Image (tube, rainbow, N blue to C red; front, top):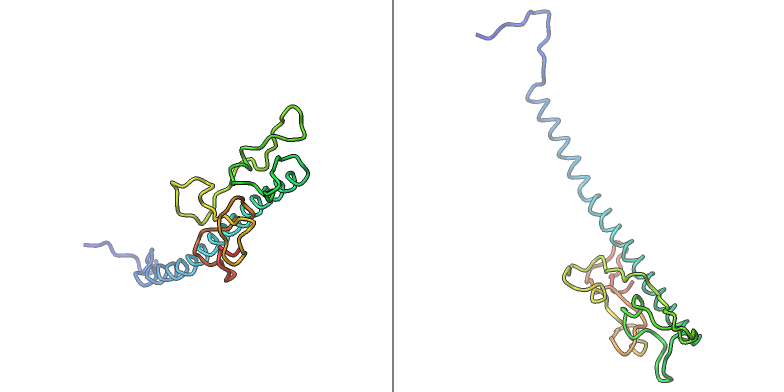
Length: 164
């Protein structure tokens, strides 16, 4: 037999109803928090994309400026933009320096954070637009005028990542 509690002492513990109400409240809070964490994760990846695009485009612009100033050797029929993205990290010889000092435009090439292709090199995660291609339909060519994300997704602002 179970021991009986004295009449003046209340029972200890929680009832089944109290436990069920607590679990229900926790479940509702978890379902509200999950979409918020997904939005925060997407926002972080979008910030990484903005930063990566800014870094690469700054490197491309620095290469073009160096070519216009005569530090990078170019032919008359060339635009002065880099022939590929790897040149930005591998460097080029300074045409004005008699010792052949190297000029580097990026320390490393960032990856597209929206590329789900772990086997691809960092350079292959980006779409390339040449100087001669139109902005509404970017095409690769002899140089790299701009880069864009190859992701088919749409950002939280409603703009496709390819258009950033």
